[in-house]
Amino acid sequence: MPSKVEIPRKTVYRLSIYLRCLQRLKENKIETVSSEALAKAAGVKPTQLRKDLTYFGQFGTRGLGYNVTGLSGAIGEVLGSSRLQPVILVGLGNLGSALLRYGGFQKEGFEIIAAFDVKPDPRRVKGLKTKLLDSVLLPDFIVEHQIKMTILTVPAQHAQEVVNTLVSSGIQAILNFSPVVLEVPKNVIVNNVDLAMELENLSYFIR
Image (cartoon, rainbow, N blue to C red; front, side):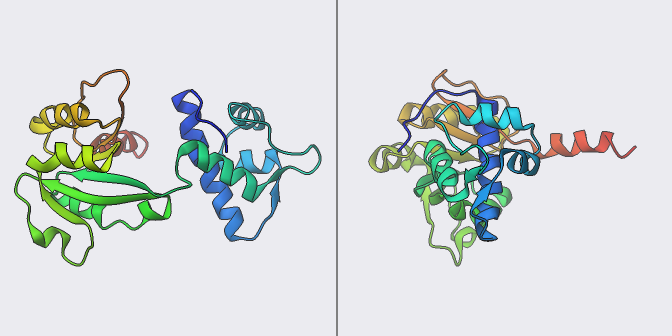
């Protein structure tokens, strides 16, 4: 099992793309793939693909390519998605509720085991097995269940306050949908998803 190593964030992002390409190959029962074919499917150059993979081992056989199952498993171990990782969601408004019902997380190795809100509304989790809890229980829940990852969908004016609680309780990674820049310690990773900004960027290309 490959040990976790420090690699650039852009490389981590590309590893996720490679993993999805490999998963599609597995679904199509393809056993081996060349670096050229995998790189093309991922939208990168073969040299970049090979460089990214050298961060955590040597893979592939000259003339034969990569074993799809083996490489998929290795990347999954590095990314931590080869086992079901517990995640919590904080902020159960319209967006939070929609994300909670998205079935793709578990398929990729992540399980939202609880959702938190300042005013828990049972209707938001109707038909779901996910626990709905009051936000005051956040610190104890994170510590008790050793949660390291959070999806944040709270209003911008409350985001930093909530993040301070999350970080002090042990959260190390945050997927942030709140439209605000968060201040966190260097050991905490934040990936921001600003849907309005993404649409704004796209609008440039349709003028």
